Image 1 (tube, rainbow, N blue to C red):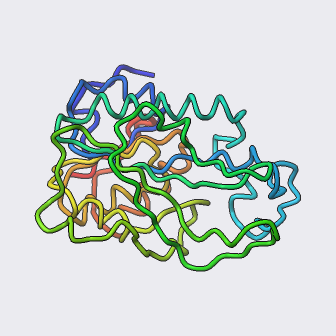
Image 2 (image 1 turned 180 degrees about the horizontal axis):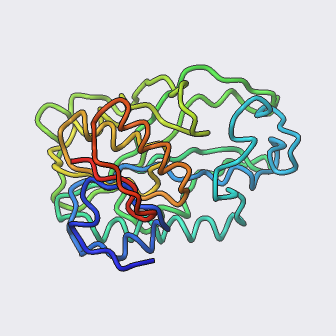
Length: 261
């Protein structure tokens, strides 16, 4: 893998590679905003049957087949350490008035809530935003149907919302993205809300997936950087953007998949 040069090899590009390794090539305090949702380690689970292939309540979901180029099954402690290191790298590269919006999901494991506190324990979490999704099915008689995910607002000291954005509550209701080949996409309106709530001129998503953060950035006329470990999802994001949002000159470089502007 060649050494990338910031900003030319980063701005408005989707980069195929490991999130931490790529972020380490970005200088300190370079970016305004980071929005991301990492893989949730769902196959490291005590109760839903994904790990052994039975499927359980997930039998009709794309996640049963797993992610491309990532197995989503890491020992819980190792997963927490990895995600904490990812967030610290993100914190390093946002400006003194920058922020990270980190979407994750709490779940019950072995009869106890797994609230991700070990991931965010030593980070400047300013607020928790609840993303209320629509519907769902719960086959477990031990707890109520989960219908939300959690967005941690991790902010540098000088971060402020855009004018009037503080009128939004901390509970947001958006329907899940349904027409998307990625197994776990989030909806464009959710990312649009975040971008419009800041004064950011650029945004990074180190777990880009199908390119939703890039799409929202394009719609808001700001720059983006996408990092994604799966070449399949880089191609998915590139196709999605090209067909719907721009007419770029396509790159054949396997590390820098797309130059959009």
